[in-house]
Image (cartoon, rainbow, N blue to C red; front, side):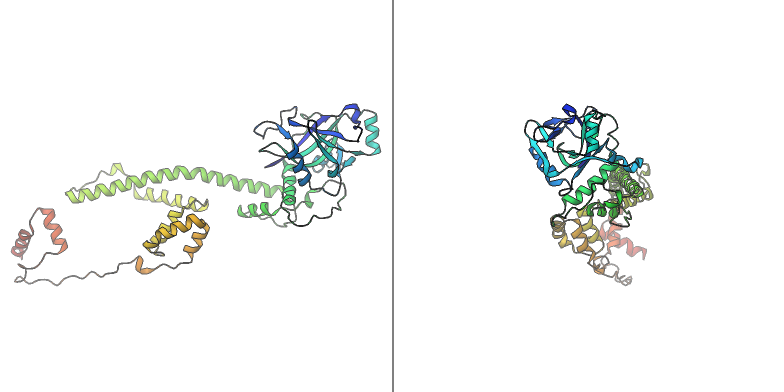
Amino acid sequence: MFQLAALTSSLTFALKPTDDGYIQALPDGYFNAVDGRPRDVASGKWLMDATAFAAMQANTPHQAGDLVIDYEHQTLHIEKNGQPAPAAGFFNIKDIQYREGQGLFIKPDFNDKAQAHLTAREYKYFSLVFGYDTDTGRPQYIHSGALTNRPGVDGMLPLASLSAEIIADIGAHMSSTSNTQSNTESNNPPQKGDIPVNETLKKLLMKLGIDIGDPNAALTDEQATAALSALDSLVTQAAELEPLKTQVAALTAQTQAAQNQAAQAQTSGAQTVDLTQYVPIATFNALREKLVSLSAENGQLTIEQAVKDALDAGKVLACEEDYLLAMGKQQGMAALSAHLDSRQPIAALTTKQTTTVTPPALSSGDMQGAALSSEELQMADAWGMSHDEFKAAKKDDK
């Protein structure tokens, strides 16, 4: 993940460059700002090294044009305060160096007005704005630079909105595998309308049900708010899902126990079941339906459940179960769902294959030798009578 930082460092001799015209922009190795940044990096420090330098060279969007040096980071605040952002100078990505043991150096080209400010010692600090990887803390690209008299703790933290725009711009730049475009931009800061929504962000917004409108326009505040609201809703639903799973599992176990006890009671002749030990079936079904709904919304339906549902619906044969489970694990849930959706239910798999026929009534003369029906056998067993005794009793009754 990328974030944006503005780091202020002191330049000695009133910003007088070294003999070769370079000034130090970042120190070497691990470093942090006086205000405690970075707070989103595990180590609490940025890391400037050869790896970071290579990333900055490759990922900085302005490869042909110059990068701006403004006053007090006005380029970052132009959309909020509406004030102009005049340039104090420029520098090119080709004119940056990494010096081991010293850090990152840039070669600035200050204009006459900036030189006058520096000669009069009206500015003392140089601040580099750079994007960095929150996992490693390494700088990844350069946005701009500024002349400032503020240390890093003053006025440089509210950059979240700009960070999102710059990250989108950098993501689009880094994902490009085509030939490099010729940079004909002026040195004015990029405006919000010039930054299109990149493809990955566009797909994410569409998944969340956000209408992006013009793909060449920047992400609006309304769209960002709607996206965050949709994500919050998904998080809330996910949090509700686990307790419901637990409740359904417990209710399923209770229902199974009730069924087992009822079967035992029927076999032993018991007539009652303690209903205080079980929940109403309507409560169980309501929780189960809500769990199914939430599972579908969050894409949590398992491969095993999908295959079971297909079996219950008569779409597949029981002998296909192992094959379909293996297919789902190998090709994923999407491929399995597409395969199962294409199948039509087989009516014979969900209906009875035989017809119940009532045997003709026996005459009193045939009763003695007639075999007992399955219901009569169950009645004889339940009453503790032998089959012959039941036949005799049946004959006498007749």
